[in-house]
Length: 250
Ligand SMILES: [Cu+2]
Image (tube, rainbow, N blue to C red; front, side):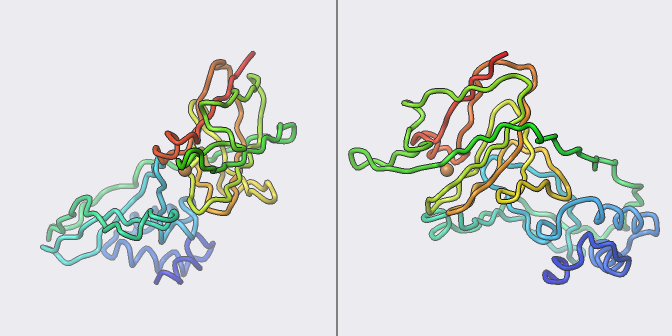
């Protein structure tokens, strides 16, 4: 089912859409089948349809149909993922809450609210390129993280201007992921190699920079000058120096 989902989720293929609808909402009314088919088409990517990764600081809106016989209890678990050495090896899954499956008739609900919206890609034709290297070093036997070897307490703010659009390319050569978070401005992730905008542009404020990998995004600064922080959203990494400021000027 997982392979099938990765292959067929969101594909413009009525057979796939009908299959998933019958799996996820087995007793759906025709109207519910229609909106769920449409939801598949416009919602998440095939990868995320079968696995939703939320790094520290990230959020998502999800539609869940619990599967189970009446009277059973379906636990929803936090599951650690491999975000680098020490992040998951000795950690157990945590039960977040339990869904109790009732034997009631299905609720005849109408379409869910239309929360999907078209997101126009930011125009990056005149964007300023900004490269950020996340780095680690050891000082007095203590781990110091930073940007180009400079921890937050020794760094000068980056300077940007209101109205500018920038493409940030963030590289990470460490054995840990770093979920990169920017205050004040949502941005749009793009392909870190080609700069290509994904098929479904997204607004995010936290983007995972994978271990030994790169991530990129486009940000546009609207008229809110001031000092804006960015940092790794693993907070002990931020405390160890992986933090900085954008000084936004008019
Ligand atoms: Cu980090």
